[in-house]
Image 1: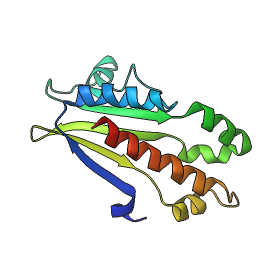
Image 2: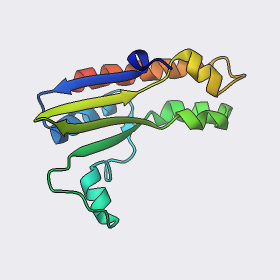
Image 3: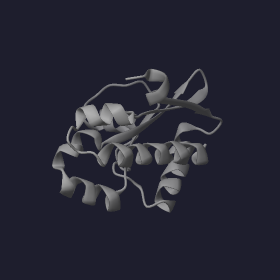
Length: 138
């Protein structure tokens, strides 16, 4: 795995909440969804389950999915599911909104889901689209 290739790092002048809202709208435009819209704001989620975080804690963990692609992909091979959860992390650090997204190269994908020759290119295409949607929402 190559950190420089797989870890997308960006910054935006928007607040984390505004970026999350804008990113969700961009996702919808391309038939992607945020599966955890009601629980992506981790301060509220942690507190709802008894966790203790300070008031300034600001982290959104957005699970991105394209149901009309994932349904076909997982029907072909449920073993692909290990790579299907895709999360975009947004948080405030030093007064600036940070965005992080982790993906994998085609070679990494092929290693994790062997004997599935079409999947690495297809998933890499999805990873690239998520990065472009992040850029659009910034």
